[in-house]
Structures are given as structure tokens and as C-alpha cells.
Length: 273
Image 1: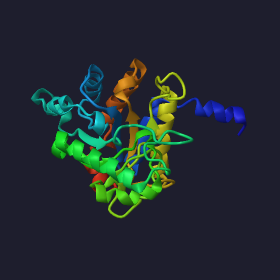
Image 2 (image 1 turned 120 degrees about the vertical axis):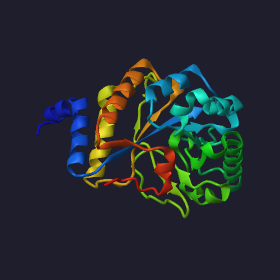
Image 3 (image 1 turned 90 degrees about the horizontal axis):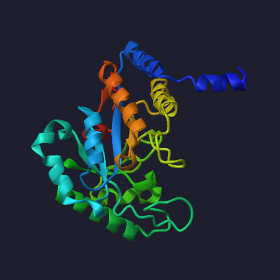
Image 4 (image 1 turned 90 degrees about the vertical axis):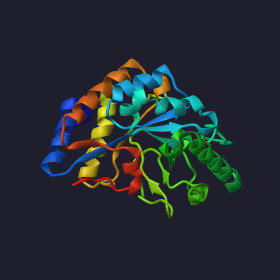
């Protein structure tokens, strides 16, 4: 096949291809599990209201920055008028201050040059802060800022009250450290190297279909639910449109099921028959 032909096929990804992929899961007697993580939350906002209006009954894992967390966010989540939308909304720990400590290279709150004691202090402080604000809604799961966490610090998680970690890309192991379950996201909808707008419908669909197909063929861990990542504070209308369409299609297909964070991290294996 020529290089041009490959490019033509790559550019031809459409919503019908996603439906076809779900059909393949259905025909195999399986259910394609998905989950949704939204990063950088700190307080209530119109943008967060808009996100929940899009998600409807789809559960969200809200990665909250502990040091910046506003008590009003806890009250917002507990508001009875939002009970239907927030019943399966859980809070993950988005680092501590969302502050980079990297000396060189890419941003990271937990780079290798930090001491284990400093990292443990931050992790423990973040966990305590979120539990004090959100109680049982705060799950013991770390979603490190910029999706970077030096692997040698994994052993610190359980001592700091954490039992899960979520980064980006297909996970290498269900349990990267004793007592720790990993479940990642696979499609970030923000074009960070561009204008911070939507990555585009084709790129987003290609990422979703690619991970679903790889799971089905066992090219990656079939038990890891396919995760999408949003950032409500920078989310644009094009992203909203994509998410509404995704919600409609997945909601109408019996081979697609959205999991909440408790299900995602309970066992680490969410491949449904």
C-alpha cells in the first residue's frame, strides 16, 4: 500500500468507525468499558457546570488539586439539585500544588531529582486535604500533574494512603507496585502544543478506536478501560460538540459501558464478558 493511500485511510476515520468497533465487541459477546477523567479542578465554576451538563449520566473522575481545593467545591458536589449528575462523580488526587519541581526537561511535580521524603510529604498532605473536604468521595488515587510520576516513588503511595495511580497511555502493569492499581487515560482532547483547543474529531476518534481495537485484539491490556481526558477550564465548543456526540453514541450502544472511578480502580481489570 502506498504512503499516500495510508494517509488517506488515516484521515478517513469517522463516527461510523467507532460504531463499527463497538459492533465488533458486541459480536464477540464483550462490552467495551470506558472511563472519563477531568483534570485541574479546584472550585466550582460555570465551566464545570457546563461539563456536567454534557456528561449527563456518564460518571466522571474529577482530578482535584489539593492545595488549591476550595471548600465551595465540596458544597457544590453535595448540592441535592445535582445529585443525579454527581452520584457517581468521584475525586482523584491531582498531585499537591500542581507545581513543577523539574530542574531540566518536561514539567513534573514528582521528578527523580526530588527526595523521597519531600514527595511523601506532598502526597500525604494532599490525601489528608481531599479527605477532609470530600470524605468518601475522595478516592485514594493519584493522577499526577502532567501525567508524570517517577517510577521509584511508586513504593511511597501506599504509605501515604494511596492505592491507585492514573497516568496516560496503555498501562504496562495492572499493579505497578504492591497494593497499587494503575488505570490510565488514552486520549487527551486538548491540543497542548497548539492553541489549547480541541485536538480535532479525527484525532480523537483515531485514539479511541485505536485503543479499543488494541484491547480487543489483545495488543494491549484488554482489562484496562479506555479513558478520555478533559480539562474543563480550557474546554472549547468544538470539544463540547465532540463529547455530546460521544455520549449519544455510547449511550445508545449495548456494547459500550462507562465506568465510575470506584469500578475502574477496584480490581484493575474491567474487561466485561
